[in-house]
Image (cartoon, rainbow, N blue to C red; front, side, top):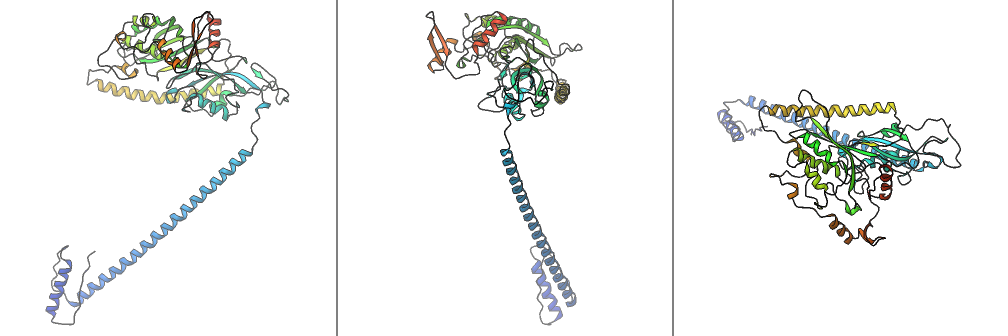
Length: 517
């Protein structure tokens, strides 16, 4: 806004007065705008001054209105803030009151309910979890989520008294189609039954023919969507998901790429039989694993889905399937790593037999294992287990899996279309299998038997003897034996495992627990 400074003087010569008014106006406006005023009468000038004064008053009134509106808005915001704080305080008081009421409620009395020993078959996508088994340094495990659901639904009182066993411990990123656990759950069967323990001196509150609790439905309502209970089965009270398992089957999925899958299939057969796998696993001596003989019942390479129109499609998926009694830590991923090297013709199939010969090669060559996410615990085989389905829940699980599949199948096709579009303009093809190996890719390949070696089993044992994790004792015949003296570890129950293997398969296998993969 431009302001004009005008001075009214006593009447003088009209021509002189006009000149002074012109000069005053020009000086007030100089530096911002050039205004040239021609002769102006006194009446016109006074009218102009009056108009400017009215404009000033109008602007003052407008400013006053704006200030009052700003004050009203500020008062409204303050009032809203106070109301919000008041509501939060009120909600907090209500929550505390509810917590007090819940705290005053009687605890659930498990002693008046029967318990039933059951087997649960579950599937899970392990990509977002740190493994299956509970760990001290994280609660992001499948087993942790499972026990949260069991406790929340009051199916168990606590883990310590639940008679819990698991069939296998899958590692970080590994999924399962058929994991099995055995556990004691709350039951409605006061009249007894297979695996049922009825508390003594408790009145029968239900008929013997009462239906059992829908375990699958109850647990799936509170479990995450990527962990699903599939079936349950009543079993004998002495049944163990770990020790009564007849065999375990794993699958590792991979794209064909430029791999020689026929050569890989030939090499996979060399794993079959009973061998010492110390060079094809991660030795876990610190946890008491001192025996590395394992029995592989079958090993094969198969197409996941045949594509007759393009049998050599590099994006076609295959899987390595291996079935065995028990597995060492990271054994399957190391087995797969060797097969990938053979499929690229960087190693000959004979490398497997050479690494299984621990007399000629007592120390493991340094090599990277295959990545975790394509590995799946595909099946756990049990005899004489009568699995029970809950049809409604089976449909819910199928719908959930279809939802996962649609989302990922569409994303996969989008990526594949981008790849195919770019391949039209370039002939260079990235090796697909390089994304399945841990670590950085070597510019120049060094054969396995020419690489630096890891410590031998004997050196590792001596290392842990010095640290007090292992002790060497003299046996009955004077020979020296090594005994694990650490705390109860993930590889305990060795004696019971040996008994099961000897009974079921007639093998004299020593210290043969199920390990991580």
